[in-house]
Length: 260
Image 1 (tube, rainbow, N blue to C red):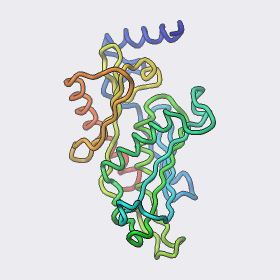
Image 2 (spheres, rainbow, N blue to C red):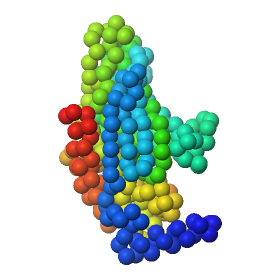
Image 3 (cartoon, rainbow, N blue to C red):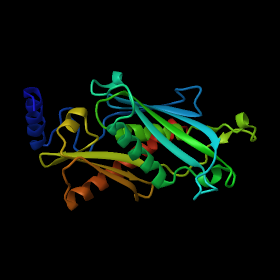
């Protein structure tokens, strides 16, 4: 560990002992969130999300293709993430790295397990043709908590997506058939303290991470643990409670941003 990193760790840990964070937030409080839709005109749906200084853009493209053999009458979803070098000195050009793959998988799991996309309504011809939904995530600026920013950007983009039926001579365009959106909330723990929506500095000293996606009923739709540390049962319960509470507020903002 470098001297600078050691000083930063000591500073954040001492603040946490006093119940404080470097930016003045409470332990269970998110940074300011901004959601902008319709940012890519040639995409079927798109959105840009800012959580603090972290910025993520999501674009949706759709195509017609063959279904999977075991699900011949349901549409297909695919998620990919790109960590571009201008977003962070730690990101490199080239094929997707492990962190980009993990980000895409966590976002994909939250959307897939919540069944927000009504894939049964994306069947064109059973066993022959279905709609394929491609979710592309582009990290524009990285200052912590990519999981929640990317998930929220994907949801906002999906909720503004129009199925391009006219382009494929399949009738008139129509909104992507969706159900209620899950909201992803991420927490990390360091030196015995758990904080939600970690900043980059907090992520860099984190021992363990937990991302929880909940629906409108407060039910858990997906969970993803990261790093090598562990949470106690009581800590997990508190993380879930904070995820549900923050999820309600974020969902309201999401609805407003897409005009619902």
